[in-house]
Amino acid sequence: MEQIQLIAAAKGGSREAFLDLVEPLEDKLYQTALGIVGNRHDAEDIWQSTVLKAWRNIGGLRQPVFKTWITRILINEAKMHLRRLGYTPVPQEHLPQVGVTDYDVTTKLLVHSCLQELSPDQRQAVLLRYWLDLPLEQIAQAMGVPLSTAKTRLYSGLGNLKHRLKEADGL
Amino acid sequence: MIDDSKITEALGRTLEDERPGTRARMFLPAKRPRGRFPLLALVAAGLLLLLISSLTVPVVARAMGEVPLLGESYRKFLEGTGLEIAYKSGLVTELNRSVTNGEVTFTILSAYSDATQSLVAFQYTSEDPDALEALWEAKGSALFPRVEVSSLFRSYDFSGHMRYIQEEGVIYGLMSSNPLPWHLFGRTLTAEIPSLGLSLTFPLQTVSSYLNDRVKINKTIAFEGLELAIEEVVFSPSATQVVYSYTNQGRVVEHKAWNMQLRSPEGILYQSLTGSRSSRFNRGQGVMNFLPLDQVTLLFTGWNATVDVGEEVSLQEGASISTREGEVTIRELGWEQGQVSFTLAWSGTGKLTKAGATLRDASGVQGAIADAVQTDQGLRVTMEHSQLQGEVTLNLDVVEISIEEEIEVATVSRGK
Image 1 (spheres, each protein chain N blue to C red):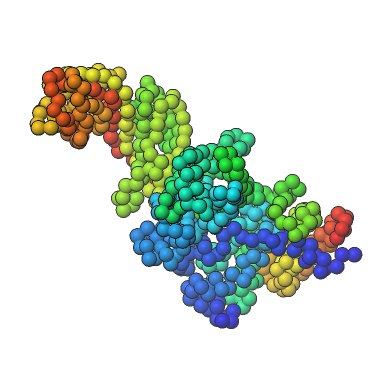
Image 2 (image 1 turned 60 degrees about the vertical axis):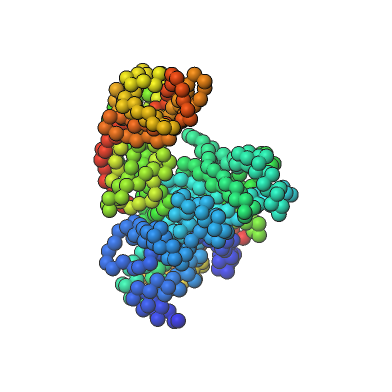
């Protein structure tokens, strides 16, 4: 079923149609939340509240692109979460230590560390562009800012991230 | 110069293995609410729907994600536990992590944690059913795993029970502890069975805090020298938990326990899953777990005390035994063929609700309690005997005293 039909069915109350819209994005949305807040517990909370809010409010969806719309909800949830906690960079010793054997854990920690050193706005813009693969116009919609602001956040975030990765060596 | 493709690759290294702990399909409510609806109420409504359906309509429960079919015996083993509720709510992920010592395989089936408790289900199996039976008989409680968790302020001990299902050749076990503190990146535990030289590490899955709710109560009731402070009620997917502390203002009575019930809006009374509570110390604190509910009225329902007596008295009308709490007197004595009935009247505070006693004559012939019923005069006891002769002695081992009271503490709802 095409996305437009799924959206129409979900608006009509079809749980399965809504899940057909959400499930292909599940992992990426969660990973984006994790990239923004830096820990799995908060990312799990943000991910779940995003889905529940999206389900509650899908009747008001006007945009043709579901991914951008739900990403906007995720960004707002993450922002509220960070605001509630007070923004605190994740200390390096608390970086994810999943038992992944295929990757260099040091590099994983390094990238995470560099990402967390960006401001929340820059971090969100970078994740939406390079992880969720959203074009600039949709990044601006998701973040609820003008296109020019989204560009500024993305390019400055990108510049900072590249600088940090280069400084840290190996990338 | 780092190009843009490297950024995606770099992000992938830190993110692409990550997966949400709970899939949308598991927690999304069945129906989309119309208009504004508090988030917690939405989740609670979904869970309540699942809970009511699963408890009253087994067919519906099967469709919504029942306890996995490891066997009917596993489902029955979990019946009435918080883990069964969590399974039916689709909140439990099967782990099935195993370790073998050659003869027997120890498996952690699932590990679940929410704001009220942490629950770990496990099993022992063997290719040789006789070996498993022999192991059960030889080792018994030594098969219960040790899981120790220490934090800065307290330690958490897992306790529980096991059952050997002979016809299926499996030993099931369920252990629980107080809820483990939130850990930044989830928690990994280790179960050790020293008697078998086995050790197994497993992850503990913690449900999202959105599925839990804490409601502060901070009310104190005073009853018969007991000052009981109800601090809060914690609503979780697997239980409704009452958190309390107490102080004994008066003399501490050995084996004294107080009780609390929850009343639903429909008027149904729920007993604690964890029994009545001892107040044997001068002060203490703890929790009481009930089935998960969304709105409850907390009722303090009095206390009972077990009084050790250990005294003998001639079985005669008016004979009495003194205890620290009061006097027990024999009244309304009546002899029949093969049995004798009498009323134990109580002079102290409360009512006599149970008694442990035996009868004996000079030749050592004994009789035992067949029935005991509360009446307005006391505890009406019927004892069966075989040809007691001559002077008969009543040996009163223990009595239970109860003071029943219904004090409404508070009415609380999830989300408020």
